Each structure stands twice: as structure tokens, then as C-alpha cells.
Image (cartoon, rainbow, N blue to C red; front, side, top):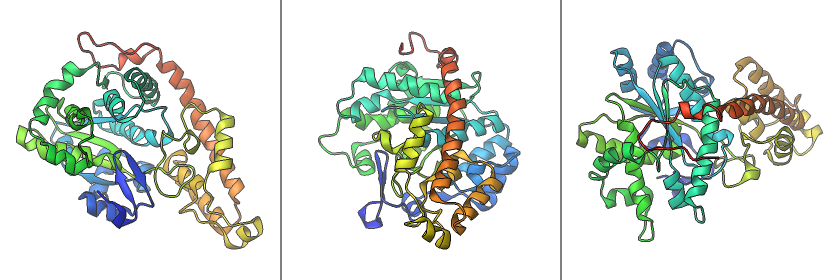
Length: 379
């Protein structure tokens, strides 16, 4: 994995430094998403998506093979998830929003895995009951995005183990400790639950007898490298992956938005006043030291967090985004004005999302994978 020699670090449990995505792609051995393949994805989908146009989804593994399956009539299914360590923030929504678009455009079934076991193993002091409670709250945010209940199933590891374990056992039999240690840097102090966890996270990749496509943050790629190594040994198809860039925390640049620091993230449950205060007080500015200098020299949209949040998530309209970008770079739009644009866009999104999130409480059962004896955590 990229480490100190690269000036940044990207692992499934942490991202530090300013990421060079060309270097990351080289180190991870993924392929840049562009050219003919990107055009093919757009053509088969029947439309473009702003996250593709803007390079938010920038890298892949075997995307072409998933598209082949669509064209030959087998189709592909979708899989993504969440490690329930706390509330849902905007960074978590990025692959889910894109997965919703893929489901809509390709008619694909979707499996959403909530890994309450992994967070119980890895988060010091977190009880299993707490992890399950977070999973429930995260599931509400997922459902609120509008997935098709007839084609979407939510999986909670500790409740759906009867479905997952037979597949995980087959995967685990083909992964040795040396492979896992090399991939994740495990030590003699690592919980045996964490060592087995990759096998359990692999299991949804093989729930259907056709290819799977997984939209995910690039930091989670190492888990599925092992899955891809194992799949041919089991006579199964390698999962295809499509990676999004890391969404920076409010303090940016570098790193990613983290659920472990509530002041550095925009949560789906934040009220309008909280959003306003967080952005005004915390959002890293690409502007100059004072208004006079900013009017003369303009701002840097490459590092300005408010602009990047609009580009990555909150403003899908390219023409509007271009006006904001040009105004900020020219100095005609100040940092305060740019923050105000983001505050308005974020609160408009969250107002609708929070309404749908409450509605999801009454329909969550329609999305949960049916398995004899499985039950959803009561809240």
C-alpha cells in the first residue's frame, strides 16, 4: 500500500496526506477510468453522470467484464456497504448515490452489507450492540436514497451469517495468514476476527451466479484484491470494482472525511444551523488572506473545500459549477460567498434526505435480506 515514501498513506482504516491518484493507481495496480471504456459505460447507461464527468469515479478493476455481461444478457449485480462505526456523513453517500444510478440505468440487483462484526473487532471500546445500532441508522440513510425495494437487499453480518458463512468459509480456505498479513499489516496482536473478516466481506460477491460490480472508495480496494485472487481458485468470477476518490474532511486538504471526528464532517442528521457553523468555522479556504488580496489574486478551487464539496456531491449542474469556479478564481466571488453557496446547497439536500430518512423507518423491513431466524435490531 502507498506509505510514507509516497508522501501519503491509503489503507482501509485510514487515509493521510495529499493523495497523488496517478501514483495510487500505479501502486494499487488498478486502471484509470477513461477513454473508450468510460464512453462505453455512458452509452450503455443511456446517460452520463456528473461523478463520471468530473473524475470522482476515476479507477476500476474489470469494469469492462461487467459491461460485457450486461451486453450478453446475463447482467451484473451490485454490492457495496458500510462499516457501522458511527453516523453517516457525506463521504459515505458518494458510492451509494452512484450505485443508485447504476441500479436505475442497468436494472441491477443490489446487496448492501453492514459489517457490525468488523467494527466490533476494530473499534476499541465499541460494543457489538453499539455497532448494530449504528448499522440501523446507516441503513436508514441508504434506503433514503431511493433504491428499488424489489431489487435491493440489506445484509447485517451478525444476523445473516447463515447466508454468508458457507461462502466465507470457501473463501477463507484459499487465503492464508501470510496473504492477509501482507495486505493489511496485521501483527500478532490482531484479533482473529479481523483476520477472518476479509473472507466474510468477500461472501456477497458470490451471492449470484453472474459478475458483481462494486462501487467503493479506493481505500477499500485491498479487501477485494484478496477476493479477486481467490475467486478463480473457487471457479467463480472475479468481482469488478469502480473506485471513487476520497472526500476530504472540512479541514482539508488531504486525507478523507472521517466518522471519528464529528467536527470535520457533514453528517446526514446535521441540522441547518450545525451545517452553517461547521462550514463557516471549519471549511478550508483556498482564498487569500484578506478580501482586497482575494479580489486581486482570486482563490484556488483545487484546495478550497467548499468548492470541492460542490464539485464532488452537492452541485450536479456543470454550468452552475463553472460559474462558481470562474467567479472564485477571478476573485469576484469571496470565500464567504462561496461558503454561503455550499451552506445553501447542503441544507437543501439534507432537508429532503432527512425527510426520506424518517420515512425509511417504516419501510426498512422491505429491504432486509430474508433469512430464517434473522431479525433487524430494534430501535
